[in-house]
Amino acid sequence: MSSRSLRCALPRNLVAPAVSGTRIARSSAVLLLPSSAPAPSTTATPTRHYATAAPAAPGARLSLPPDYIPPTTPPTARPADTRKSQLLRSYTSLLRSTPLILIFQHNNLTAVEWAAVRRELRLALAAAAPQGSEAAEVASRAQLQVVRTRIFDVALKIVEFYDPSKVQPSEATTITGKRVKVVYNHDLSKAAYKAVKAVSSSDQPLPESSTYAQISPLMVGPLAIFTLPVVSPAHLAAALSVLAPNPPAFPAPSKKKSPGYYDPIAQSGLQKLLLVGGRIEDKVFDQQGIEWVGKIEGGVDALRAQLVYLLQSAGLGLTSTLEGAGKSLWLTLESRRSVLEEEQKGPQEGGDKESS
Image 1 (cartoon, rainbow, N blue to C red):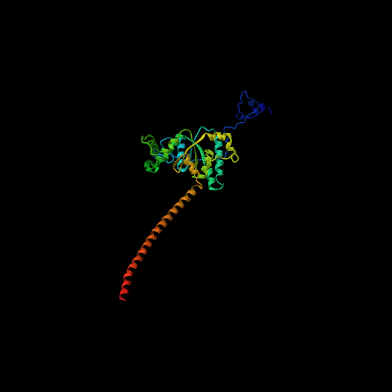
Image 2: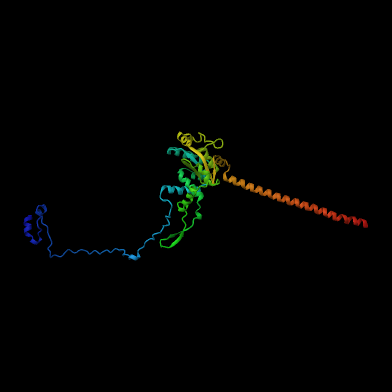
């Protein structure tokens, strides 16, 4: 049956109007449901309900006090998120926790030269103590690093002239609006900044016993520091033999033992390093003083043993002196007593003879 006869056979209300210009209207018919026919039944989908926050009353909104200071971000004199501030904090922590620091002036070593120098230094420190001991851990924690001279100078001032325990507490507002006493005494605080400013702007010269007054003349030009976590004369001697050899006390390693030490790159870097001084146990030492510490045989334990021996010897000498004085006094008293007894017995014996 053709499409034309099909359109004639269907009722008029079931024939879709033809769309002119389309192939579908000419080739097939579209069946439409009559308007009176019921819609096909579908399964009813339950409506989903989501929890929504009820609008809070205007007076019940939470807001921070205008002068609230978070505990994690205390006030600072300078921005705390800058690289200079972080370097200052690292330098002050290093100065407070490191008992031995050697200061070197360097003449712009390249990255390859620094790598060669650190390699030879690491090998020398590892050979200074057997593996698996505490000395080996000391060698692994030794560092040779470049410092910013100006920031390192400020860190020295903070460590010596700033006392965090003397900072007075100030009032701060908590998150609930309560006023409490808080002490802001960190190294970037306003109190630390005022202490450094007072030292820098003071017209009076610093006392000669001050550590900063002794070490400040060395803070010239580009600097590098070598640090050890403990005062170990053995590791210090090994470091000096590489960084600042001075035979016969601190000879450079032999070519057979350390062939990399005589590499042109390593030699070029070592020639650009100059030892100018050091800070050992909060005391400033020149090159001769540093070498004296490196010559101590047995390390700090040997010094402690010598000190104990001296104290024991002094105690024994004092004890023997006191005992000698007591013995001489006792002998003197005994001799005097014997003389007095003889004098008393003499006249009595003479009187007995006359009466007989």
